[in-house]
Length: 580
Ligand SMILES: Cc1cc2nc3c(=O)[nH]c(=O)nc-3n(C[C@H](O)[C@H](O)[C@H](O)COP(=O)(O)OP(=O)(O)OC[C@H]3O[C@@H](n4cnc5c(N)ncnc54)[C@H](O)[C@@H]3O)c2cc1C
Image 1: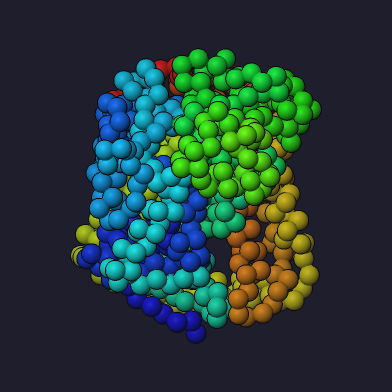
Image 2: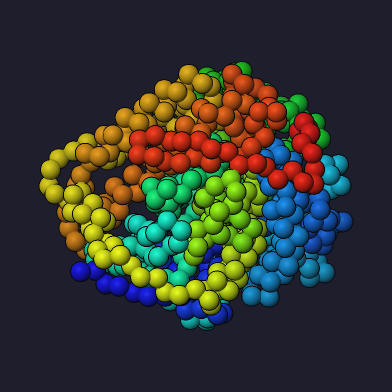
């Protein structure tokens, strides 16, 4: 028998999205947060560069320009009503964070300071604009601390180190969840009027990534297994500047403060690829430029392999500016590379960073299941695991933190209204049994393929064949290899059979989630025969609006993925070629 708990609202995840939702929901409803990590260890805490909002504190700016940049940055796959909501509500959201206690960096006259970031421009693309609000290079950390304190103050019930392993749906409505308590090894069944997934990203399907170990796309996989389609999974962002070989992120804020990219000859190569925005072009363009330089033998080692790299030079900014605006970055570079960024350039290469796709939602965070916007009652999603879709084919820097607070808050408010009138569902008998049986199976003592080997193979396939540049034959072979890995996974056993603190068991389960995400992403990428935003195909180098101006909805059906489509909202700006 597993424990049964009841709440009005349950939020899965304690990152920026989960905490903002919980803060809103808890004003009116009995709210619990389930999180597999301690809240302040969520990946939001790693966000460095800032949160974009057209405050206009240091130069003229307008939400409409922000919305346009978001749509253009997303290569016109962003839903434009969503982009307008994002940009318009960002301004108040930042002031609300300030009033909740977030210690933003300030201008000399005491306003929230703002800096430049890739793809953010004034007057529809004229020149870079200062839009990113920041707290040194610890913006995410500050958001997390601020929201967590507010949630504690609001009596949100936190269940830490409790990992959701199943979601209970009855076709039209969400009933609850099944979760695993790491400390005791017991299952908990939870019943709720509404459930919101805010479980974050899935960068761990790649070998070199900026993402934390916990970013394994659990919610995406659990919902896909229960028949919910995933949207635009082919679009995965590679951030141009990860620490060489490690993937640890060097924020775009370094370029926002004036840092530049250099090749082996010491040339500032972004001047060629993006004459107007140069080093502050959107990430997909900069990441491809780096790979192109490397492949042309202009990387630092000149060997043209995936291990080759370029330089990010911030030395001309001076020690004082680096230490005050980018203290954590300076520390990372000293710790991991033994380099002082005030004296020497930083070796960087692109790193897998952000999932544009995920669980499809409407503007209120309700999960939708088809192209007509049919909602599942009582089921919500927000943050990186969700796809509203505001980032389209390529997210602009600083727009994820905005997404968390703007859409997290909207979802929280809607959810609070919904639970006020919804009744508590009945759970079917034995709701936790399938999960209990899976765990027992993993611990049955038989031997199987080593999970770490499957994980490495998956990461290598995704990095080499579904990476920055893609082509049909490579992706077709990736799909086959991932199919094979999913099959092999069925025989995997957990090497550790203990009851308490069995992290190994959870890693095995997370590998299953990663494999499902990777498989769906690879199938969607092979299916989309065009290049758009972060999806760059060598065999289809152009954007093809006639055939592909549409969102992908991918359904996992046992061993296959069925693809459907959803129209893109282009109600404000007609797609144009993207030039920077
Ligand atoms: C290094 C780095 C720097 C970044 N910098 C910026 C930036 O400057 N600006 C910007 O806009 N964006 C930035 N991003 C992106 C942005 O930080 C993330 O997209 C965002 O923080 C994700 O927030 P989230 O709330 O959706 O999820 P997360 O913060 O990742 O939190 C996920 C939560 O879900 C929980 N969870 C997951 N699975 C389960 C499960 N099965 N059961 C229970 N709980 C679960 C975890 O415990 C965690 O609490 C950065 C990302 C990285 C990796």
